Image (cartoon, rainbow, N blue to C red; front, side):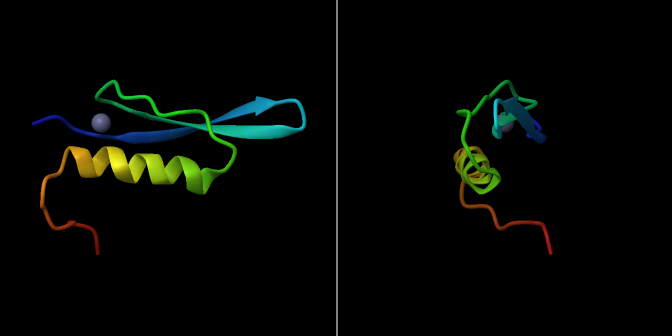
Length: 58
Ligand SMILES: [Zn+2]
């Protein structure tokens, strides 16, 4: 069973910081302008790999 440990890396560009989500399984999301957008991609990625499983987080 693969682990999906997410990291959202800040990527500085002139005048701004982009956010780059990546996962220990090798998945990389798109560079996006805001953290919530990066988080959305992470949620989709995790949903793809967790079929119909209730979340274990409180
Ligand atoms: Zn993953």
